[in-house]
Image: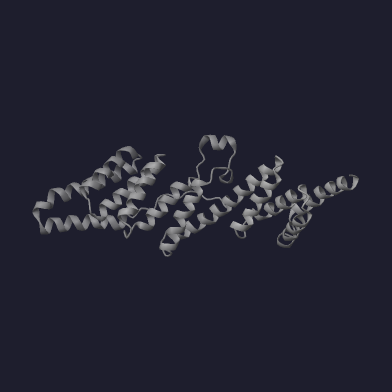
Length: 274
């Protein structure tokens, strides 16, 4: 399964730095009364950026929040809001970070940074870092609760659909593929759980959902095996043979075919003796 590393944030600094500079020049040339305020905005922005670069996220978050109020209604305020959301995410405050991005998209749906907002939402929900407990348990994404993964999928799909030419779109497409593989693997994980506990109807149904809800995913191979094995245990030979046939057609070199042969031979011998 594809493994991805979370990239560093791609900020929209060039656009908004230009806005700061333009505001400063315009303020000085047009209206002397705006000089102190403009100066404060530019200074506050630079101070926030310095604190962020130094890793002082908590201080930077507060400065960006001040900047949002001081520069309200400007592109710079939008930039400050997104910077704050990213730093909240990096500070392990995903709920707060999501709340900020959701508010941003609600009030600025046509912002030039809307694509980044969707991308950031996806990254927050993607949450590839399992943390200490996940590492100790040797979990992967396919074994965890999939609510956040599905939300990340929705975020990335919105980004790709609405902004197909965005610079964030290529990475979003890779993450979509990863999430689809993870979600299908999760369904197989559950089907396997049911099978090992003798819940063969539930196992077959869960495995079948992989074939119905996903297309051309690696998990389909084991899903077909679990369907065949579950139907075999239930004595539903026609459905079992159909699943085996599909498995053999789509995965002719599958190791599951050898396992099916061995498992089913044992079952048939038992039936014969009975």
